Length: 479
Image (cartoon, rainbow, N blue to C red; front, side, top):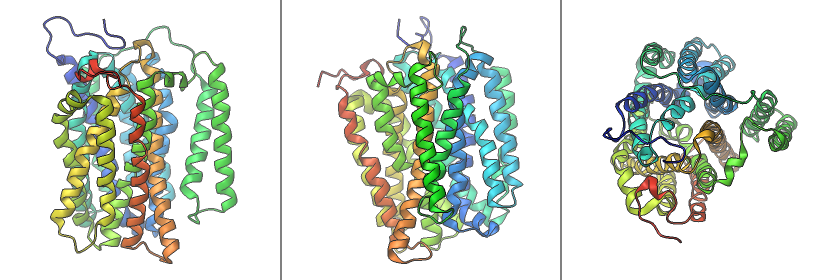
């Protein structure tokens, strides 16, 4: 019997039909979420003009959503165990869809941010709960293949998003980038009602309301402080106060979690080496990569003078490269194992991210496509490896806690990536005396986030070469 995952019954297909169907339904939710995030990235400059806002301040439309995810994801595992995966998953899709409508009705940056926070409450439950269902129904040896099956349809969203967003804001109103979620959301609610099993975990502990308050305050204050630091949005005193309050709340939660029998975020999971490497190394990698959806469309539209439609047709190349990688993920892990894949592929991915700093308006589009396509290919392999490795040695009874902690840290790192990319751009502009970002300022920002991403790769050396060999199929040997 495999720890943490159920074996398929004798004679069953490698991935059971029920599991495949569940993966596709979860992928529909991922499709809607990823389509939304990539469409809005392309539309940010147009929305800035509509709201009469500084384009560099529009990153708050992305970080407010990611912050909402980080605050409410910790509750998703407990809610799924208590009320059932089908009930929570269905409610999450409905909330996300209503939030999309509110985003489309926004009349200022402030109302957009509030609507994005509400939308994020739904997004916070969609992906972790769907992933939890998959983790409880797939054998460990099939997890990499199942994750690939789950994410391939979801990656269609980022491929379609940039050109679709450019087309919508060029020929229609930017509000339609949110309204297109309505039919997808309605279909998702119907599919969940008909086909997703209502899995519950009996005997759950009482909900950690105090932990939710502490983590919510801590993450919200920290993200607000990081988003506004050095950007002139609020006074420096307020920024410092928010960062200080966030750190204090996080420290208070750390003390609380050590005493609580079932804390909202269980940091004792970090004692599992494969989980710890996936969290720490993966967070640094995601922080660097998380800046791409903000920096790249702005550079192409403001720095290069391309239209939103032209920008979207270029930026989709990263996601197209990610789709091309998925069939190769299992082969790469079988050949190299998790440790060597994460080290070598992490370095290569960071170098390709740094390559974006060399982009210039005179570059042939084919060269830009080549860099973005290659970068998307190798980044997707890195994400697949991290996402599978995280659950390699987690016992079944701790799977909900692992999903909540991993998903929360994942979203925090993406939020920090956007804030960090925006801050690096602002600092580069201030250093060069530019009132509007120039191409050279974007180059500096890309180099900064690439360096952050690069620091994560060597941390995978903390694992032996035979780590999670049951999952990868790599023979391995002790390092």
